[in-house]
Every structure is written in C-alpha cells, then in structure tokens.
Amino acid sequence: MCLLHPNRKPHWPAPGELRASPIRGRLRSARYARLRSAAPGWGAQVAKNPITEETLHPQTHFPDDGENAALGTTVSSSVYAADEEPQALTDGDPDTVWRGRTPAEVTIDLGKLLKLTRIDLHLPINYRTARTQTLSISVSKDGGNAITVIEPAPVIFQRSNENMSTFDLKGTEARYVTISFEESDNVKNYAILAEIRIFVSQ
Image 1 (cartoon, rainbow, N blue to C red):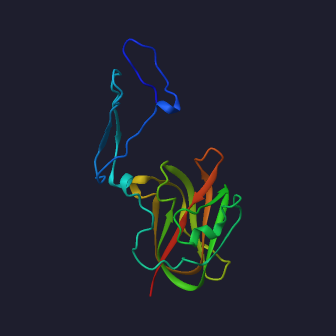
Image 2: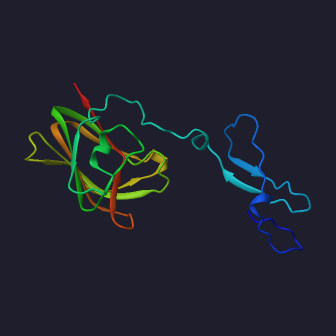
Image 3: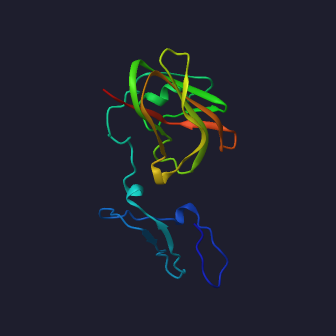
C-alpha cells in the first residue's frame, strides 16, 4: 500500500507501520466495498470493488439436478498433464481438473448401454477466465463404430453460464462417450475440464 499526500512524495510504509483492525459484524451482499485510510494527516484513498453473493459465498459444488451416470466411472484420455489425470473428470470434485495439449480425446465408459439425454461439460466452478474450446462429441455402443452426435464447433465456457456447456443427446443409446478437443484458446493450446456429467433416461 502506498500512502499519498498532496504535497509529499509517495511513502511506502515499513511492515511495522501497517496495522489492520478486524471487520466486525456479519458480511452482507453488496455491490461495492469502501476502504478508507485512517492515518492522521494523510489523504484518504478510496477503493471500490464489485462484491456479489458469489464473492461472499462462492459455489463449491455442482448443481443437484439429477443422477449423474458418469460419476465414478472409468475415464481414459489420449494425453494429459502431470497430476491432472482423466479420472478427475468423474470424481465429483469441482477442484480437480484434467488438462491435455490439443488435439486430445477423453472417453468415458459408463459400464453398460444407457439412453443418454444430456451431457454437461464443466470448467472449475470458480474459474474466472472465459475459455473457448473447439470440440466434438461421439458415442459408441461397443467401443468402436462411433457416431458423432455433436459436430466440431467452438464452445465458450464463462462465468455467466457457470463455466458449463450443456449438450442434448436426444436419448441416444451408448456405453462409451468421447469428447474430442481440436484446439483451445489457452496460450499453450491445452484443453481443460473439471467434470463431465452425463444424464440418462430409464
């Protein structure tokens, strides 16, 4: 923190000069927070930063909107970064991720034939940077003879849609689901996902 005075040069205080008092009371939802310098003889400096309900109470779990058939299933990938393995995609943990340099594929084995209604692809819930990833989705009943159900297209993940993209699979029957990433707008062209959630009909 730099303390400012209209007739003096900027002064960077030593660590011992900085003191902070605890904030008392319960934090509430607000759009702006105002911080004032209490140092006598110094000009007060005001900072305004947006504060939202999400800032005060960040989301730490995926929405509970039905049984996720992919949870705990086996996942394989053509490539992945160290300590960011594909099994993170079905562990139900929003803080673990899979990451791999494109082109890359990840395949989920659901264990049996199911009628797939929807697939949700998630970035980490609190990921703050919008990402565009060009991807397609194919399915298979036997691990071969795959059919493409979502054609290759750029997909934007951003906070306004909870860092999630949803695709309608229209009741397609399959056991294996493959997401193929052609490219990503990441500087090193890495694809990234935190979770794949698949929903089915009876």
